[in-house]
Image 1: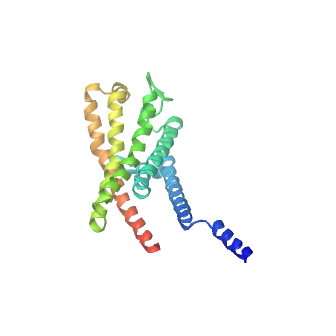
Image 2 (image 1 turned 45 degrees about the horizontal axis):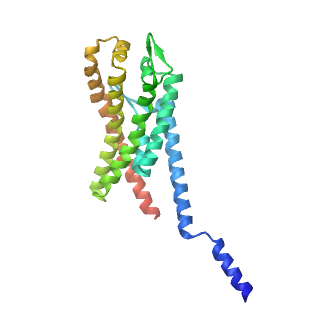
Image 3 (image 1 turned 120 degrees about the vertical axis):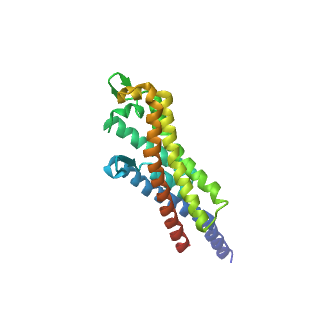
Length: 232
């Protein structure tokens, strides 16, 4: 009798609690989703698939996976994805710079007498990290007020749009504050035209990329919610 009781006790203690199993499964699902989105981020950063020419404008898709990570996995995961986006961008601008403006994003590039510096690293990493944090934070906050239907769709659109605009605004602000003269020298333009050039970039590339990020957040977010409900 005692042996039987001892066996039952050992079985109970050996079996992991249901809460621990659920936590482990949740962590595994999160890592799997993060890894898939990270692979997409790498494709966008290292291949031409990350650029969409729309008329005279070339919209880059590098922040889209960051926005989606923030919306689906939370602000902390979004910030981490933003760090990887910054790292991938740093590698590209350092080793295969697509334009003479590489000094803005890496301290290891120079054109003429213009050199990058430590502020280049800040411009390369900080805006992208904040993209995921802003998108995830907005989705969490707005999601408390709009929980279903059209309200949830609006939440996804707003989170994606302002997440992407965070990157545009901070990069342009970094150029203005730290590289204004160098930026215009590289363009061969007078410094007095700096604000005009930055405003044009904001109104064209910035808004186009924000619109793409908003739509991506909407469609991917709604699809993820559908499959989550279906499998729950």
